[in-house]
Image (cartoon, rainbow, N blue to C red; front, side):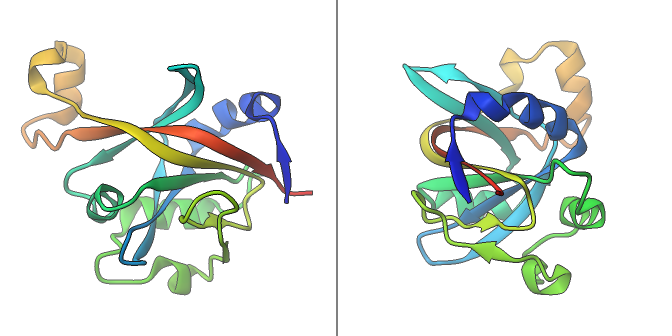
Length: 168
């Protein structure tokens, strides 16, 4: 893995995100899970490069990220891991080990506790610097309609990008 400036791969990140990426978290009890995300923001806030992820309260990953200091996002930018993205977006890690089931290979993070998925090409290692729950009162009708009757809202996690790694 080679460390690069996130700006150098930002177009790849933005292009891949709607197709799916892996949000991976290792909590303070050493529990690890990954889930598929297709929403997120790459930007610059508080004089820091930031990637923002959204996790619903109902997700297994929510319990983990609430007890973690960081997360990683791994992007399969070469059209690989489509089945794995589908699986990780539709199955919970509460009762199964997605890594074993899918033979996903992980590697320890260089600057964070959470691992990266090595079969991906681009990885962001992020330290959580802020979190904010989405609230009904701040949503317009379009956003409220996304949630429907369930009202299974998200919590936004702002991660300072500590490292951006690419496969060599």
